[in-house]
Amino acid sequence: MKITEYLSKNKISFDTSGGEIVIWCPFCQKTHLSGMKIITFHINPENGKGSCQDCQKQSDFAELVKELKSAPVVMGVSEGVLEFQTSKSEVKNQSEQEEPLIEEEPEEVIDISQFKR
Ligand SMILES: [Zn+2]
Image (cartoon, rainbow, N blue to C red; front, top):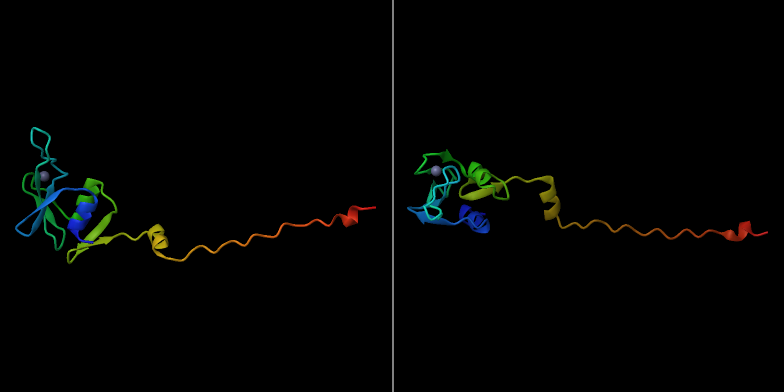
């Protein structure tokens, strides 16, 4: 997944400027008086490193995602492709193996003949 795809998926609005991705800075949270968000954080789409033109905060994409509280958690960016943490539960979801059906045990039939007189 690319950074832009990730942003779209998380409904984070962005713009592109001079080959960079520009988003709203979660560190200084710059807004217009109207409350409209001002995008000031420039990200390099190749390595995910970026900086804010307003508060000068420098951050890589993994840190940015943490600050934005987006999901899934990003571990890093390699050649423009996001790297995600692979947790055990995700691995389980990815496998197509279905849990084996538990064979129903046949109901135990009690031989009552022995209780008969
Ligand atoms: Zn900022």
